[in-house]
Length: 509
Image (cartoon, rainbow, N blue to C red):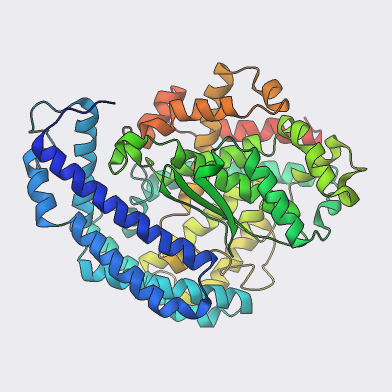
């Protein structure tokens, strides 16, 4: 898009691009820390991350940034003051003000300290999880929770301190609104899970035989290369927790992890992270360095990863095309397994301890558990020392199971070590968004299943790019979902999708 020139706007644009370049360097440091950095280098790496985080924050809230911004927009009313700006430019200025306002509330020293504590904590978490030692991580978690409480106070909130943290990941959400969505969602998912439990069991034991880690890496690259992305702009590596990280629309990094006795986990992780990657690579490059080339929220981001992992990656048409290639890779496991049996096996519903390994029906229950615990931790109603017991009790309530150890319980996710309180609800919101987006996609492409069964994935990504990716932060999550689907966000499309799919798989009315 051609943007008209305004001297103050152009100066601020250059500052914004510089900040984004610094941020991409910071992301690269994080990526290296989780993939190739030697473990003994955590000390200097924490200092590097801390210093760069402080510098980026200072730039975001600098006097120069504010001075230019005041020439373009009213800080009190949000009205655009500059003349001659195009509509995209006005959106960018509006979002710059939001970002500045939020950054200005946090002192740079606080941001530096937060970055250093979480960088160190993520390494301790990895050791604690490996050793099943919650007490090792507990002191770091207490520091992180204390820092998040201070952050919430600095940001300010109306009803609950958790709202201030949640806003960073989903600006359209509050804890009250999330609870109103999660309450009926939990009820319907629990009822569906119980109905499935009463149905005939599906034998998926053949999926849990050992597969050589090197072969699994080869399979991961096979599926990554099948995704409609330019291989020159992305790469796949291994980490202790799968993630996606974008440095630029033309530089995206994803990781997976290998579980010797669960080779499908690697495949679904690749599809999930590739979904994140395709969103970032679908953002407009011509506005890179501005909010128009940033994802609107983590809820929408998660809708893209869950779209490819579940709505596509766990669908029968996808495997009608991909199953023969997988059979050739692991013939000793799959050569004699018919496609229909394989499809039902990968969609088995069995309550499990690990969120990232959870089936579609129980996945959101894992998120609901974390949401309720996070709110209590931030509100000071739950102490860190009491966390394992509270986790196990809530898990028993939702799943009828008690985690056998902390590694499969409250230590399983990396997010708290990174300071990401308020992040988890976006996982479930992403599922709801994906289902609602998919309804609109089906209307546009009623032949999608046939095309997918023939290996055509490009048209799917193109639809997502046109309706979601290319807009960046032009629309809020609420505006985007209504624009795409014609309706406000609801739990109903997701629950309807699950009921129809699993009634067929488990063969009940």
